[in-house]
Amino acid sequence: MQDHDTGAGASAVGMSGASPTETAGAPAGRFSRHAGAHQRHADQRQTGASRTDHQGEQQRGKTRKRRKRKRGRKVFARDENGAVPPSAPAAISVTQSQTAAPQSEPRPPLQAPPRLPQQELPVFAALDLGTNNCRLLVAVPGRHGQFRVIDAFSRIVRLGEGLTASGRLSQAAMDRAVEALKICGEKLRNRKIRKARLIATEACRSAANGVEFLERVEREAGLKLEIIDRQTEARLAVSGCGSLVERDTQGVVLFDIGGGSSEIALIDLTGRRSSRLANHIVSWTSLPVGVVSLAERFGGRTVTRETFAAMVDDVAMRLKVFDGRDRLAHVLASPNFHLLGTSGTVTTLAGVHLDLERYDRRRVDGLWMNRDSVDRMIERLIGWDFQQRCANPCIGADRADLVLAGCAILEAIRGVWPSERLRVADRGLREGILSELMADDGVWRNDGRRA
Image 1 (cartoon, helix red, strand yellow):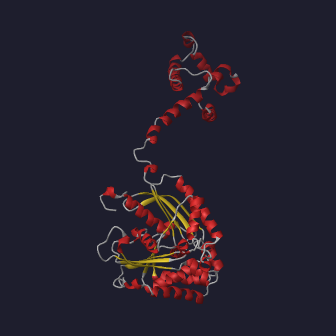
Image 2 (cartoon, one colour):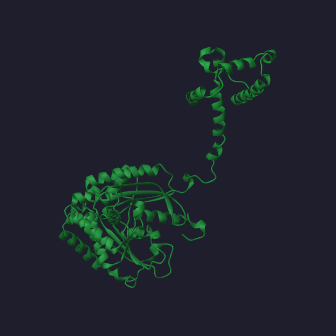
């Protein structure tokens, strides 16, 4: 075999014991360093009379027996029948017999492990086509309320680019989104998906040609997306963050600053707590403003302090007409009340706060930031020009013209619901979709708890 032809060459040089070709026809000068030993080997193959003619017969007899035993072991290893095939060198035969058996015997257990292989677990998928991003998650269930991601995709497509001014999705934006969705479609078709939910949010909700665009997506990418309403979007954002709300928490204002809208949910946990965080929503709103739409109206590349203050005031005026804004007044002063942000704005702030050389989700997701830390990060970003924002590895060119608009929305939220603590979540709608799909499918019921 090729492996043995190449690999055994080394052992033919380094191992003791010559091949039949070497003993029969090799020149004497080739092994001159061991001439005495080879002569004794030749004597051993002669008749018993020749053995008795040498002095020191007893010592040589002991040596001869040991050498016979060594040669016997090699012959046994080379061939079960005790013979060496004439066409194969001895070193190759030894290598084959000593390595082949150990490799072949353990294989059956590896082919049939006692644990279920990954592909036998039910696979679920969630796709979120937003105003700014196209994101996909594919996961299998884990422990109760948890899952393990086995595939993912994310790309900034800016589907809502120019939507504020024209009321329509532009051709270039739709082309970018379709190309990203084609990749998602291939990923989904390559797996056996038990359940999936594919959603589109504010850009497709508000665009005059949103439905027409989704028909094109179905034709070209093979994906049928549903446009969800704002209440569903707010509920899914809450469902995706349940594990980040600790047991002693009494109240949370959860917000998701998107590209074209911002969802806000007030969560009251002072009563008996349900396993689903979304069951505790006491009030919610969806502001028709996000980082893309706000930046397009006020400018995102060059943002003065006056421009930033104007953006904050714009969002604050929208929050003033939110009727349910006071539903958590009884817990606002409690140390067990906090804000929970699930958007690119807060994850960017967290990355800048940690001074990361490269964005790291593991360090950002679940991070706590106090009031002073948030103040400092926003102040720092306002002081940077566009090129400085581009140069930061946690912002980059894709977000440099949007991050201050997101900070303005965050400042307006903090003005209505002041809190000493903000928790950062690098998760959102997709995680909420997966949690609900798995709970509805009953994948966690076997642990004795209700999903």
